[in-house]
Length: 378
Image (cartoon, rainbow, N blue to C red; front, side, top):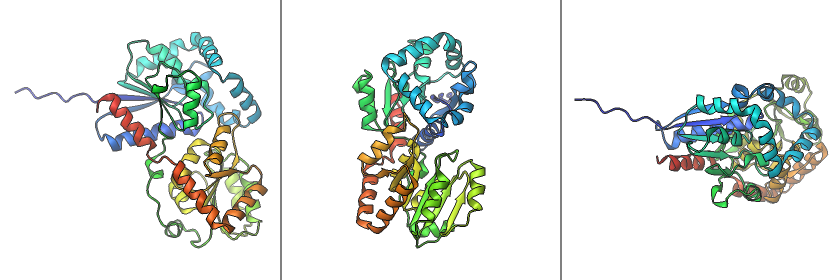
């Protein structure tokens, strides 16, 4: 008797790039959610299209990115001058002769039953290289509000966006409304777990359990005026815990560890304990990165935004303010004033917590996974 062959599992390829941490983490969150929703029913693969396939000098983009964002005004100018449907078409048309061979190599080397892009530069080039006889193509937009026109190509089968404002922007750029769905921003499942007692978590983490706790985050590279803000909070006379995450910025970590703190201060480099840090804290002070905002909303953690990358992070500030989930406080003095007010006014703080709960979308990655499952007929 001839054994029945095992059916081949559908293969999903994710196009991402390490230009900022959000693209990789979004792809990983979706893959994790697929594994939860459809265990052992698909195979997945991530491809850094810039690093592995882009021609020189564009394949250096992941290395350049941390330096480029240190010139925020230049970054802002380049964002705005290239944003727009006509500009996006001009960019892709101009670059296509340079990118054609690389784009065709990308799609040929990674055959897929479904393609998911989580980076704006992948969309049009991949779609052009794939041609008409291609697998389903989904775009997951990982900028929260101020989404660049390069995210949107109406040849994509579905465009999944994090906010209603992003959907409005997609339609403004002539995307068919039926193709654009608001699902939230995908984050790892550990950021989407039910809340725990803050005091218990603080004891587990070795923090003082009975003090208001402020979590200060500078992103993976420890960017933003982190030290200056931490020093101002510590010198304010407030009685609290300071939890400071420096990311990969070892110089900053060493400087903060040498400081004589008035309050209990817990200094960390890159850490994988951020989900517990957020659930254990009472407030977060952070730059306006979309991933951190989404994670904080899921943790029902009042947000103080103290820095932003002009261009795609401008709308994130407006979103947090309009949702009542936090404030924009670009100076250390404004950060201290907000903390003082929220600590002194628990009813106001509770309102902000409830607004975070309403604005959060902890089910986003699972929703995207189920959408992929529907497209594949799982």
